[in-house]
Image (tube, rainbow, N blue to C red):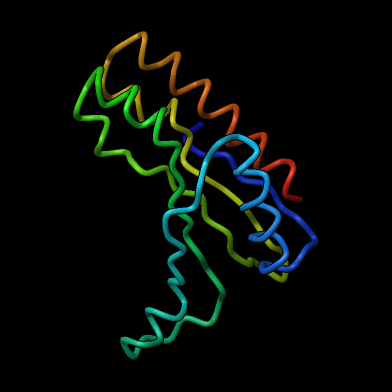
Length: 127
């Protein structure tokens, strides 16, 4: 499976605040919070569902994978999305293990699985 997505009854704002805190526990910081709904509306496009993309990074992990293969930078930083769908808040991400398979390096697969577990833990704790 390519993604990991869960649902919460919390508001998007509460979910994002909790997510930021749980990411910090796993040594990940939020580099950027991109509001897709606002950007599309700014461009004159009708998009009425809140949808935010958080770009998250752990600099030590980023360096570790880039030292092994520069192409991994194509997948960095990690992205976590928070959006509403039919009145429910959802949190999801592409799994790092699914992305890294394109590089064909067993050691990188192990690192990706570790990062994935930590990001999934942060997501789970934010609901």
